[in-house]
Length: 465
Image (cartoon, rainbow, N blue to C red; front, side, top):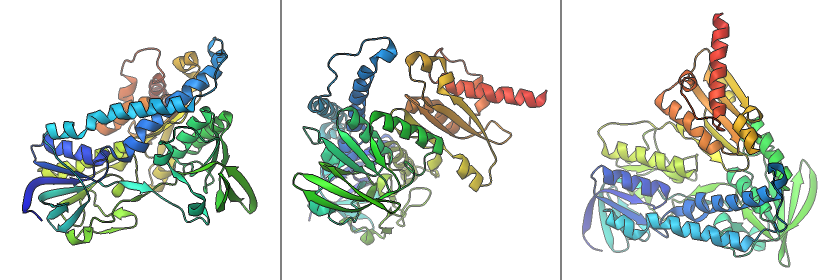
């Protein structure tokens, strides 16, 4: 093995966290090496945000065409979905986005990029192929892979990960998603709109357990309208292969029944990629949940940091990127910043979208914090009415007796975009009163947030009178 090369920072993993961390370090003047095992962009590019949102957009187009009468237009005579064409568009988009994180671009930017399997040799050295990289600081960002449940017959019958689903040229006629979290719900709805018969099977009584009940209820109604069949609070007792089909034996509160599908897709979460790193040689602690980090994103080796799905419960690309940037500032900067996961917004891109940031009411109560909630229904928002997109609501939670924003949930067609103003306010410590005093264009769906802020101001005046 060659003599060691010295770097200020060595990053293992070229997904959202690794790329964000490497670029942050480069801007701070560090000499950076980045090691990626398979492909840049990680699962986010191959099976996450980009491909799924492409299919969601195509599915939404077909749904709008089918409902053209609701917009004062005639429905097209031909609205049969073309799955192959939708997949071709998706792959073209992924290829276009991949150019921004190409090896050539990274190397031109000053990052020493190597493809291969990396592992620790000791507390301050990483090996990849025949290279030895000595590091001042290291960032672990190896991400996670789909969780495979222990269900009798599943492996023998065969299944798809979301990654593999996106490689298909043609859509299956019948499909079952195991797991009804954000990713499963997004894709189930999109594929149903693209003509696939879809089942959602989930062992919880509600769509993703951390969602507000009102949001989960609206989402369920939307999925049902689209024709998605879902079985909540349901266990998969076994799977059998029947020719080209798969039969799932399901159990809902003691009632057993079967469904037959062509493919099974796993959407049950992810498990961290820690194997093969020899992290113990660097004195980095980990378990089956991932690498252990403190509030500064530092591992048990003070010179090794971690970010993203490898160590976070919030398995979203934006959360991974934010965590990586904070880790690098703490690793290479003069000060220390604590991570605040509650300030990381998240969004499920169903239709309507479900976006959230901060505390929910039940969490605030558990912390002993009083809450005042201001709610605006989208059916009362002028632009939502004009757009024919008046399903949903805006809920803003304030600390009792003040305008301090503790959290918010938005269910709306464009909830992800709408949440950004609240996210900025919370990050900068701006109260809801300031949002009420801010002029906005009219009409917009985001005007629902100002309506909530105005309602707060009126409530304060009423108490003073």
